[in-house]
Image (cartoon, rainbow, N blue to C red; front, side):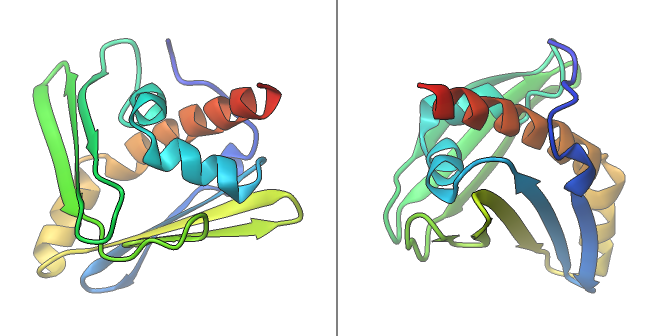
Length: 152
């Protein structure tokens, strides 16, 4: 499955706007309702999230899409299993999730994710794991998926 060279890959940015935050931004060539659907539907998330290459798979994807509802994604790669989880605090489909805001720009959607950490040391540790390059690859997969959804 090697990394795709999806449209708009060059629009991906990972920045550190504060000592405790990482912000990921990417422009997708799709309307926001499809990007929102791909971000919040388990069968779609399994196709793009954490799928860095053929050695990475999503073993579990749970989404309780409501304020107060939990989400949990578990992946497996060469270094073993890893999990991410959280709680939805606010949902205003298709433009806003807990820490995710989606903007549409002329039929395209800009996704901005801000993750907040307890301190700069934890934030920097996360950045050193290769999180930004892994997210960029996952967003390439998301771009491919929303392209397929537009054609259906």
